[in-house]
Image 1 (cartoon, helix red, strand yellow):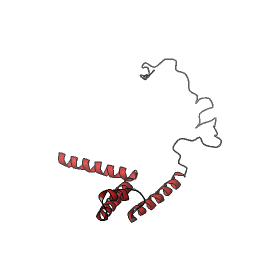
Image 2: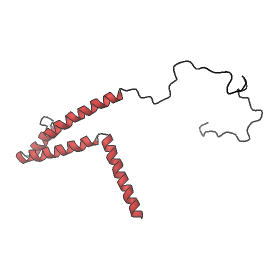
Image 3: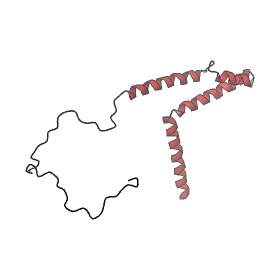
Image 4: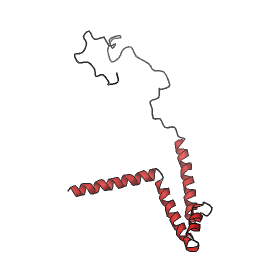
Length: 132
């Protein structure tokens, strides 16, 4: 039974890694590496290895896959900019307008809802932070 748990743990770790890579744009790096490997093999077949490496990574001789990756990455960044321009409220904002406070709340007479000061201190003191 322990083997099953380890298997699920490993599967969860792999899925989390794949999700992280996809979120951070790692899929583009994987596809670009695949394109470079194909270009390197194709260039090495017709020229010496040093020339093939230079031609593959100089940026002046992109293949069809490299062109496609570049265009799709450009579309993705344009979409992210439009989503980021929408207003996203993450923190509390004060309401705009007037707040009405009624003197009589649920049958209590005015002034009865105010707090009073304790005459006796509590038996247990509140915790103090280590920095104080």
